[in-house]
Length: 481
Ligand code: AMP
Ligand code: ZN
Image (tube, rainbow, N blue to C red):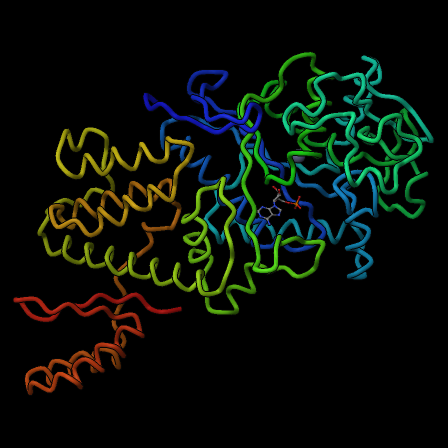
């Protein structure tokens, strides 16, 4: 924890030293999925970046209390208050009840997270299971003069909160583009947002609850304030989400929270840039989106996608192409081959050290120590994972390090990268590949190098990397999936 960490804070738009509210502890809130469809790989990019943040904090010794909501009610097809309820649209599409739909896609989401090696949040909280907390907060906002009733709904009044829009740099005298179309006539200001809908909005709404404001359901934003404050208290260290949340969802969360609590709510706002498809933004509502299982159908593993995401800084847009994903797959496969090679050499006793990763005190100096230092500095500098990955590769190719040192460095780095290195093991070589290696050796003995090279290429395609050394031919094998 002695390490100085800096993080870019969307509030203020600067990179600043990270200081938690309580020494050694971090309260982390991430906006969870809206469970009306599968997560697309853009959503998953955001959750991978947030996982890297959490792992970096754990790596430096912080205790992290990570809370995530699951939006199973209240999110309309626009992030503002226009359009239909996303859950109702999904249920109609699939002929399911909204409740069945919500549970199905929630499970699918966490299954994706598990296969991407994303650490499970400390607490996962469904919006529909926190209605009393939301009602209590809305009541508080009414009592404090920040909310009003109109046309059966309860609205947050942005004019009563002078700091509204401070994070997004919004100006209240400039109407949002979306707000000009379909302005709800109940709103005193087009930026006002719904805290509680009554039946007036959707007469066929399946999810509804009794409340002091009438039978109805909550707007989308209030759930995050209610859930965050229940599990993390009224002050939060870091709040995460994708950049699309800055102008509406997080702006509204911030306003309602600070209005209700009467003080600053979140110290660091962490926003992940978009994954973009060739023809622009990838989004659930546009329909044309890719899921993790689609990538798997095309022969990629979740780890390949995770590696692909590690190559871009979380504040840079990342363009998805199949070619780039293939390149990531090859890089990961090469890293695996190197690692299993180190394992085999290490087991042969060259390094004579079987410990699993480097402790801080293992190396007072020397190249291993400097790689550790370089890696730690990169991840502490606004989570610069691509730079850290550069260090990984430099380390992997450095002849000055022993296989044991390389193996243990990579294991240690993987606490942050989360590629699952500890499970990488040399594979039993299938009989047909063993035969090809023997045929190649015979060809070399005959000095038939054309055949030997062709066999080497065939072996490489199957995941066998051949190295000819003065002690004979060595190989490492990583099955191609
Ligand atoms: P949703 O389920 O729509 O509420 O979104 C879940 C998370 O994914 C949120 O943090 C969004 O900001 C984020 N997100 C949505 N689209 C993308 C994208 N194309 N790239 C990266 N993150 C995204
Ligand atoms: Zn949220």
